[in-house]
Image 1: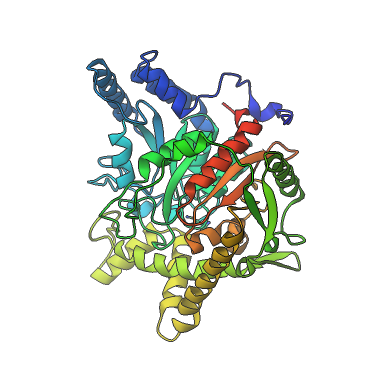
Image 2 (image 1 turned 120 degrees about the vertical axis):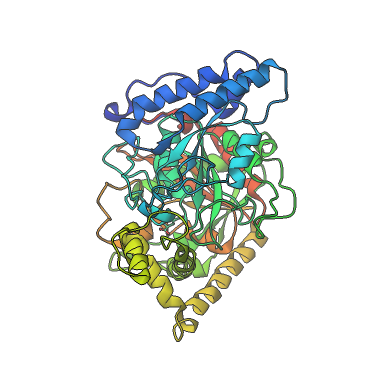
Length: 511
Ligand code: GLN
């Protein structure tokens, strides 16, 4: 497949070979490079690139160098080294890191230093990764652009006037810009896949329950899931192999053993596979022409590998267009459920136990309200109010309960579709990355950028976005694959097969 012509303004002169996590690890294991050298190189890249991208909220420079030295020692002593030995990884700032500030993109947690590591962070450390920093995000993961961050806006490495997507925009931008080969994000309604698509990297939201949420700051607990962002399917699989593990501390975490995801990427034969195309996603005016064209080209690539495409129906995820405005039951359902859960989850930020406390107050109630009034941003307050309303007596049946029922219908649509097909193939986003400031005045417009991703969270299934081309302006476009529950390996296998036939991933954003 031919490369699009590089945009001279944004692509610089990056010509060096793509560094994958697997490649970095193997070079370290073979003793060709020290972990210290690798960490220093990545920190230098961050220093160079970060001023124009702003992907990080905290850099763990000393910690990373210290740890790299320990790994070099470990290697010298001939000890067993883990799956991510020496690999620099960035972690979204809603994932707790012991001794390292974890803000969740919010002023209310601006000074919060967790006394414990999230399960996924424990897993990273157990497999000898080097945590390089914490990435910017929309406050409490509420948003689609990182513009809701309480600290700063991250820019898209392919075009600095555009958003990187969100809420895991910092993680996606850090990988896309070549600052790290791997990053962790979290996805409640699309926050891994949407920024992945906007930044031209793979983003995987595993099946709900595959990865422990212990130590992930809760937003919508029945929807949240941690997952990898990476440039290759094999790297994403490697990170998923590390983080997908049983954990008694999260009662929703799966008891059964995960599959071997890297192995899934090494058998990328798709001959005879059936992909479903949801007809309700392709409505007049619902999808930009450039996304449509890229998806069509990707479909032909899959067909050339022996994949059969069939129509499937997801009636309760249907997208409607009226007078140019998009709507869908899935988006409405999601915003009732996630705000309800958020209003309950965010009740704990009261200035008493941890985080920010307003010091200008004259009573306990005044302290609560000033702390929350000053600590939370506008979008978070909007959602707390919406959620409290949806749960309030008299409205609970009309909103929350109704949404819970529609959620079940959405899930049943997927169950039926997966009786016919192995994977669902669809867009990740309606358009490529939009301009900074373009949707900030219209929250509803912003909510609609997740119109293709939200259904997977409501159904609890795994889904991934995979880069599949560029718009004429040079902006990345992503396709989305969705799999039945626990079949996350299929996503990675298909992504690896597609990457084996195309070379989008070799094109590099500004560096
Ligand atoms: N953009 C969606 C929201 O604002 C999804 C966010 C997410 O997945 N964390 O809620």
